[in-house]
Length: 475
Image (cartoon, rainbow, N blue to C red; front, side, top):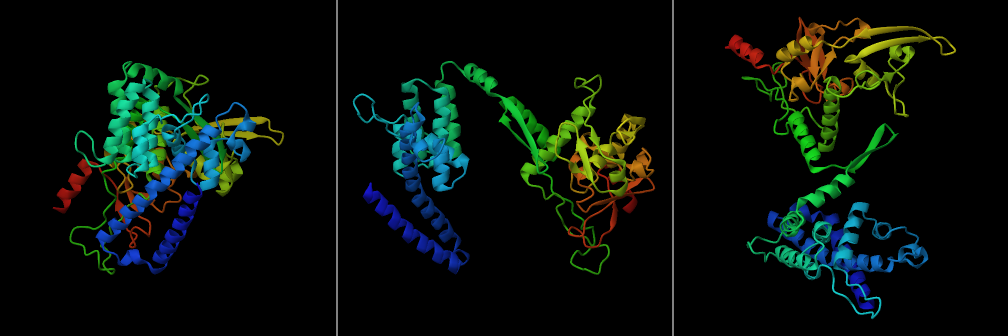
């Protein structure tokens, strides 16, 4: 062990000095593409055996912590509750990454027999050899072990899968494919599990059904945490709806017009190419879910709650609404929310004005229904096509109908004052820089300054009829 420690410490000093010099000199900027790839390959080759050392250590910690008595566990002696926590504290890696090391360590470690003290073979001996040779990393071992352990309990089956998957990791598989990545090993392990599992998919499906679930946390700093496990068909359906709403293949708006020179800053007709959507993929998934829930709530096909449709109730005081500042409150959420949430929900919902005296007694109730009727939504959808923000391709059927002039300021619930906006653009209209107005019943938008410096108002529609009509007029 002392030799290993001395070697690792010496290697650390050498690598640290070399990397520090490279960062200081910026050698990567001057390197050729072939050199960059070679450096990546060399760094990965150095990382793999170091991961093997950590995997072996994690396996040993797991064995020394496998005791029903907390005082006898290694983790307890180091002030940690689990092996993963100990790894996190020592290495400062993420919990997910530490979990991979624990899974891999338990899969390839060689434990001792309790009675004889004899060293037993690893559960995945072939993957252990591949790990020691630097041909597979911790993520590959963890991927194989997590899939095979969950499905194959017969030793002979696991042994066969282990040998073939290790060969695939080395690039010696039966199909002659190059060395497999961790994701490819996971997929191959799933195939092995399906082929060798004599019970088929039904037991796995029953286990998955028992483990399914979705849990909501408390609201902290304006966000509610969500965690859980989805059944494959639920996840697939959700993904399909996300794809239908987000339509990832479509690009953002292009404001360069035919015959216009976008390089001339003095040309008032010149535009610029810009991408309206700067959201991350996870933010897009969140906003797509918001759209799905809104559409489902207004569909009329979900069960009633308290005798009526499930309704999101947002409350705010008259003073805050008048001043435009203050907070809003949602039933079931303890934390106050920005006032724009109330405006967003109220724009497409029913406003109930409740007057109370100083003691809280309700003096009067006034209800104003500001929901656009179904025939109005259909007409606006025919006019607008999709969400009217250029580059957004959320279909009108998925959109909310926005009062351009707020109803609280006298704006009518009329198609001359209503436009189609997706959930995301509707909720962020006060802050995203896009402006919307009506010009004799026709929606027009003006892009934010970062997107188009000339700040022109432009008719906004993706309706094929309107686009063909404009083409005929200009032609």
